[in-house]
Length: 338
Ligand code: ADE
Ligand code: ZN
Image (cartoon, rainbow, N blue to C red; front, side, top):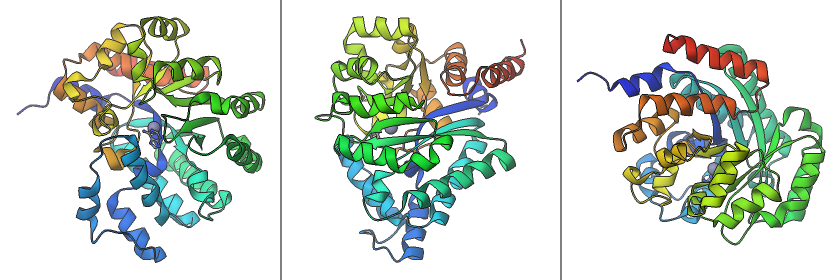
């Protein structure tokens, strides 16, 4: 059977990824081999057993396994290997720019030095730029189930690396941990010249999105699905042109949507929201960038024009400078033959 032309378009177009937790790209095979390399015990007999465990009813089900999984990451080489493997997937999917999240507290909290984590990730990203031509940015996330003092301490630890960190983010267990818990640390990050993003409206109510916009002063919202429950909020996000980094397969696997057919991405586009497609935690949710686009193609009437819009948005919503954005948009245009 010939390939669906929309899937061919997805393959052909260069894309940017703006919502990927690097620890969420830890494939079961690598988890298993790093566990052996580092003498870490995992509660699984083999790789298949790990995959079978990936059945989630909600965000917290996933987070429990995500934190357990990252325990195998111990050395600078481990973080290098993790990031390098992700960059190979970027190359396969024609992702030419990526803005990756990392969770320092997920590592420092179990005795791994900030330096080990950061330098491992960074050296892979440098090699990715030079050997694969993939540009990147790094966003340091605060874990919202921990308190703000912990986030402040992490921001201080990041001091020596800040010339290589583009922004701060907010992730982990959303409900019960509203953005308002972190207003002060985000304010300080902003004063230090860092970009700001936050997970909001994945499981949390529209109120959390208002807090992220008005209180955290974010440059992008990660997920934002529940904005659709409040039409005034949708209007506001559209007017502000505030990007939403949407993650279709994550939404399905974490029961944010009941069915991929019911995914609201087309509604979001029609409402004028600046949405992008991303993989979130690809090793846990069944796929990387193109898998996420293809899942939408399989389940919805996503059109070629909508795909092009989503791809253009990925560059426009990135933290690349104006010239780099324009260059990528021109490439997209050239591939489309206009
Ligand atoms: N950490 C990793 N993935 C996450 C997600 N989808 N939501 C919140 N925190 C996360
Ligand atoms: Zn996420």
